[in-house]
Every structure is written in structure tokens, then in C-alpha cells.
Length: 458
Image (cartoon, rainbow, N blue to C red; front, side):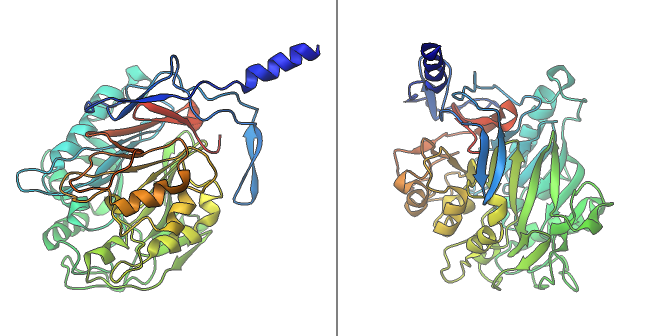
């Protein structure tokens, strides 16, 4: 009997050999594993080892971790979105003839809900449109288990993290010519604290659309008295951000409950809004952070919308271009958001963090990095949306902040492109194309490009 028990314990604790990383070259443009690095472990792609089950301590609270689990085995890398799982595409946005920066991501919920996060510059509407069309016509179909047929250019939500041209420049074209159909709403900070760091024509075009034909889809998080007119000449200082406490943003009947705002993604998955415009959520309260100006472009970055994506045990953190260096005109909003949401992020942080501001050194300060990726030996990953016009991205300082001391464990720093004169690291993966992650086992783990990881809360 004793020999039998020993054999059983040995079989449960046996872990697969560590995967071997090899160069996979240039990414493809599809929705599955693409380029960068691949795993060759002589069998299934496994990572991270076993979880003991029982309870996990997170933010000082014991969390039920379910039954004891053996070594994580994610199976075969998915080729596209799968019903019941979460998928994210960081789009590869071209520089163009007149070089332009730009960033956009598309999040697909377990039930097929589509959330576009930023839309790139004025020459990137075609790329965003193509990604949405691909999802609706090839992947999110009844034949693949999704509940209904979607219109080719239908999305549920659009989140605009802030007003810089590389994040909102394609908005007017996307809602005017061969337009996206937005069924839920357009979430942004509100027409408040507008300043010289904002592109005037892009801001005016967006403002006119949201106050005109898209009025019914206007989901402003912050308010002013009065709000700015559709120019950048009136700051309109925010008086508060009540839109951060509206519960389910798809409903109006729960607004009075003052619950933190979220977007449902199906099957219990959601995007929770943690902050906007320098304000942060603390329980059922919105706290104002240290005041800062509107005259510099990096001050506009500090007003970015912050969101946390949850699906089962999996967590993904994004915050646009949120700043944190604390240098002149680079307000340290990262530390304020991180400390205000300490209970939400917990002691385990997140599985994947989107490096703020295209992995530039204005952001990723140590308070933010520690909140997202505590030094505990667990595997985590960082991603960034970059094209070659973001010269120096990722900055060496940013790579060092995330990678020093084995902070990411077996994880990597993965980017759509490594720009000219960027920093270097053996843990930096240049996808050179669309960057993809997708959960498995209901959020118990995830694939990032061609590597599989267990979620840190598994």
C-alpha cells in the first residue's frame, strides 16, 4: 500500500521538462500562434508546474483554488477564438508613407463580445476594420459554437483610453465610411481636462460624432461643469468621475448601487474599470489623484483609462499610455492607481500586463511593476503595441524594470515590433506582426503566441 501511495505522489508531482525556445521567424496574420518563439518540449506544451489546490492567499484573503491540480497542460495552441475562452489581438499597425505611430487591440469575450481598445492613427482604420471583419465572418459564428451570426463590422464596445492621435485618429473614419456598428457604447473619460497635448482635428471629429450621430453610445466616465466644447481651447476641469461607479455599463437600472463599472464579456468574464483622468476606484468610492496639467503630451497620457480583464483565474491589465516617471510633465499616476486598487490587483498581481505608453520610460515605474508582477517566481508576461515609428521602444529602462531579478519567471516581454534603437534583452520577443493571447480551461491558463502558461491564481 505504501509503495502504491508513493508511486501515486510521484506521478502527480512529475513535471514535464522545460520547453526549449527556438526562433519562429515572422508572424503570420491569422488569429492563432504566430512567430516570435515556439515551444518544443517533445510533446504537449506545458508550463508552470502544479497547483496544490485548496486555498490561495490573495490580497490578504483566502481564495478557493478548487481541487488539487496536476502539472498544467494547455494542449495544442488554438488557431483562433474559441467559445468559452478569452482572446486578445494586439494589432500590427503599419507606419505608412507618412510615418505615423498607432496602437489598437481587440478583445473577444467567451460569448463573442467584441471590445476594441483604441483605434490607432488616421491611416489605421483599414487594419481595425479588417480585424473586426475577420472575427465576425470567420471565427465568431454559430458553426463554431457562438450564439448568433454577427454583422461583419459589428462590435459591442469601444474603449478610447485617451485623446492622443495614435489612439483615436482612426475613430472618425471607422464610424463614417464603411462604419463599425457599435451595439454597446463608446467608453472614454469624457470631454474634460482637454489641453494642448491633444490633436485638435482628431479631438474635434470624435467629439462631434459622440455629441451627434453617436449620442446614444456616448459613455463618458468623468464630468465637468460645463464640459468642453468640441475644441481643445477649453480645459473644462473634471468635477468627478461618476461613470466609474455605474456597475454593468450595459444597464441603467443598477447605477444607483454605486458598484465599480464593468463591461460583461460573457461566462462571468468582464472588464473592470479601475481609473480614468487621474481618478481611481477604491471600493465604492472614486478618489481624485494629485492634480496635474494639460499642456504637455505626457500629461494627456496620465489621463488614460485603466482596465482589468478577468476570466476565471486569468487577469490582464491595460492602461493606455498611463505615466509614472514623476519627472516634469510626466505625472506619477501609475503609483496612485496601483495603490488605490491594491485589493483588486491582490498580492498575485496579473498574468499579462500591457506595458503603458508603448513601453517607453515615462511609464512602468516600480510601484506599478510590483503591483502587476510581484517577485514571487511565478510566470507572468508583458506585452506592448509598437510600430517602427516609436523610435527607442521598448526603452531599455522599461525592459530592465520588468525583467530584472527574474520578475517574470518563465515569462517574456513580447512586442508587435521592436522599433529602431530600442533596448535589448534575451527575454524580449519581437513578434513582427499581430500579437495574440488566448485563455484555456476557462481562464486556468493561457497561450501567448506559441507558449502556454498557467494563470498565477490557478
